Length: 285
Image (cartoon, rainbow, N blue to C red; front, side, top):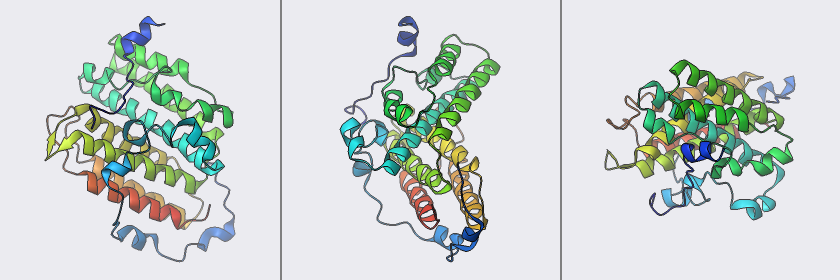
């Protein structure tokens, strides 16, 4: 499937040549009567098949809900979550690239660099406009150039942190609630499951790029949850459970280059996504 899906990975070299808000009142502290730890322990069954999971368009669903015409049919909240999801997917690609670069696999790192001419970044255009969010073309380009020109890991890390800071500024303009952040974490984690399913068959890596994307998405999802500021005990419990589950999965990646397969599977990742969604759904907006 990976071979037939449209993937507009514009090369970094070609690019170079072409020149929370958390507004929760105190009375919400005891809103959740059910223990989130119990919700977390629930067996997440009946999630969609991999084929339907990736059916939204783009890479593993990362293109959004059916393009611009689809966005017009989405509610304001759905458009916000779609924008936040795509921001986090960009971060996930860059995270995978940065870690590959740190590990010495510079050629693989270059394939994960995103830039303003890229398909996924272009999907953010309507969100930049709707939420009056700042674009981050310049910092994205600087990171792409740092990797392409084989700069030191310190320079690449500095460029990466600058892009992530810009992504967070754009995210802030959408003013996500705590619940919306967790719903985005769920969607990004589900996309990670899609990528893992594309990259691994029968415990063998058949597409290293997709396999690496899965890791990057999970790391970006974890950071999104970790930077949320819980306003009450229920939210604090939810974040702790999210981070514990995501860390458990990402820790199974002993080698990002693809020489050794992570000791997880797509079903486990999908299950985690469903658990995050259940936890988020139990919270007030």
